[in-house]
Amino acid sequence: MVETGIEGVCYWPAYFDASAQRALVGAVSAVVDAAPFFTPRMPRTGKPFSVRMTNCGPLGWVSDKTSYRYQPCHPETGAPWPPMPDALLALWDDVAAVGAPAEACLINHYPAGARMGLHQDRDEAEFAAPVVSVSLGDSAVFRLGGTVRGGKTTSLRLKSGDVIVFGGPARLIYHGIDRVLSGSSTLLAGGGRYNLTLRRVTPLTGNAAKEAP
Ligand code: MD6
Ligand code: FE
Image (tube, rainbow, N blue to C red):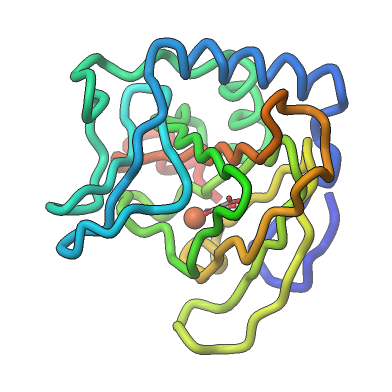
């Protein structure tokens, strides 16, 4: 683990080696076969995101004209999200250490030119559990700020196989993707980047809550 200088942000460069990255891409492809990428839209305005999304696990994050929310089914097919791959459950157990499994894995696909504006991840009912993020494919310029909008920001280059965790005092910091560096990886056949974010959505209860850091 590498210190980032931001309390609560833990960074593991190259957590997944090349063969583990290929296995994860295979697992993502299987998820996408069952739950195709959809184009999320901004609440109210309906403006489309430049990233495409899908999910696995019992709950998935969706965004449309109505709201940002978690739901158990795909917004277009109506099917339940596919199960979370074992490698992701194992990652969560390794780095989140909250005594309860991840409930949602949001999969973002960044085609060439896609970006993601500064945001907080705050649609979960449980902030004691961290958000765990995996990058696959092309490198990305990741921007990190503080817990209030408009403060100082720093940037970090996330590469394929890297894991970054936002927990404790960093659980609600602003962050976004300024740009993806096209052609920086050959992992994804069509180029671009995947980002997987694992979350706990419902409250930690009983022993799990007592074990939370
Ligand atoms: C991305 N990541 O890497 C976007 N959220 O494409 C996130 O939005 C994110 O990396 C919460 C915690 C870690 C993250
Ligand atoms: Fe986020």
